[in-house]
Amino acid sequence: MIDFIVQGGAVLWVIMALSVVACAIIIERLLYLRRISVDEDKLFLRIKASLLEGHYNEALAICDQNLSPFSTLLKVGIENRHQPEQTQRDILKDAAALEAPKLERGLSALGTISHIAPLLGLLGTVTGTMKAFGVLGKFGAVSDPAALASGVSEALITTVGGIVVAVPVVIFYNYFVTRVNLILTKLENQVNTLVLLINAANHGTSGKGTSEEA
Image 1 (cartoon, helix red, strand yellow):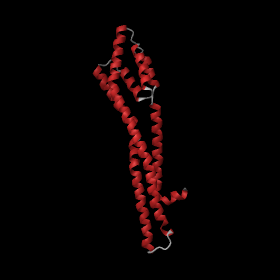
Image 2: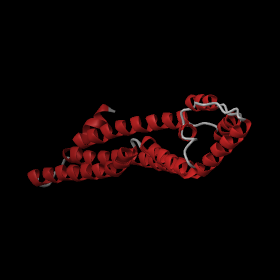
Image 3: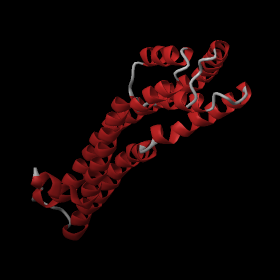
Image 4: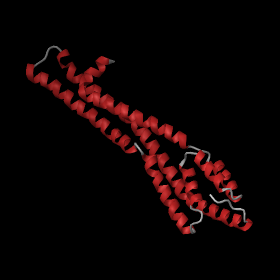
């Protein structure tokens, strides 16, 4: 294995370093998406029950226990429940937009690695081929194929290395982009639902005169 890496030359070392960075990003993003995944329907029903009873502090506590973009949006909506409806919508839309950088963190680097890994493999192919032709240029006709082995090995190994790194990185990049876009779309669609819920709770509790101030 070490001989294989040595034969790949400096370009292969760069490709391997990029693969380590890509693995770190992929693992971190998978853990993050797992951590923020919640049963949104169940969470929504719990929050709705608390709001309709006027238990705003309890609803905020439930939001704090769930580290997800949806619970963050719920918390912002509850904290701004006394604002006019249009203001609530604007605040919730801004809050949803603020979740995007957290969800997209590391994806630009992952996308860059997916693009440059095969290019580095191509670069290694070129440099390896240059070495092989350099041997031919120096010695003319080479009767011993082993003299060309170094350049040819570098050319082939770096090409394989670049492709091996790029393929899984592209797959995970597209997966993460799809997940992030889905989450952001759901957040945007939930703004009106949250505004209606919060204002229905406000009207209901004000009629009972039992609303709990946060």
